[in-house]
Length: 109
Length: 119
Image (cartoon, rainbow over all chains, first blue to last red; front, side):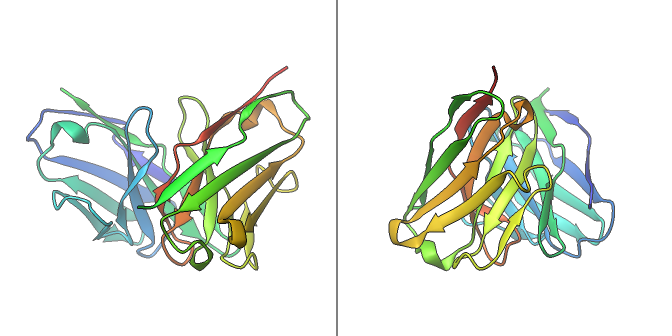
């Protein structure tokens, strides 16, 4: 099973600052990595798929990069609505095994 | 507008069964694979099961294999999860999620239905 590790666990920043979130896979997942945002009491929302493609309706301040085992989600300038938990996710093998990282909480400093 | 509405959750004793449903609208249901993803209270996300558009391919997480059965009815635009031999560790919010493409990620999610397994 591929294990995803996210760092840091918590990121304390102010609105307008840049956020850089990391996701590391225990073995290569090629570019098949997605990022989700989850706010309290809400379902997750797909932000980025295939490592660097923004999902429908996602603002340009969100960007993803990486391949293989190391991936980054960058929020260029935090808006108040961006404070949330962010999860990375991959799928490997067939039959499929989907795994999520433990999440990074972005909170207001 | 894509909508996924889960139902069927509730309080159930260990060892008993429960069937979850997900009603889909706003997209061509039988064009897409569908999934169940769960989240234990205060915890992270765990994929539970997925099913292809024609039910020809099905997958389960090891934690539920042999106990849970996923199915779909394309005529009713509905997804189901039959959960048998429930355990305390199955307690979670269960989300129905639409596959974006090719069984790689999930682009729309319902609001979830809560399953609590307790005596």
